[in-house]
Length: 103
Image 1 (tube, rainbow, N blue to C red):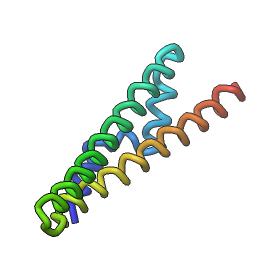
Image 2: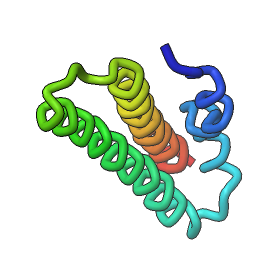
Image 3: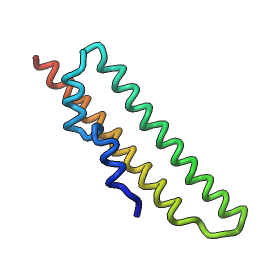
């Protein structure tokens, strides 16, 4: 498997609870730009990693060689982690909305 722990430490602020705290501490006018920037970073990462997976598939077909398991697995894990990050961002957004609308 990959060094998933290192990746999680690097992007720990995308954990739902911490991200909610980030939103609550932010200037209300900065919440939407923050969400947009963070979600676009995750989308761009997923697009890039998916492109690498497809490139590895194409390479293996052209060279009539087996897929490089480590490359494919590493990039697939990154795609899944990015999807989890985006889900956590969106869940935090809904919690933020609930909290701010009640106030």
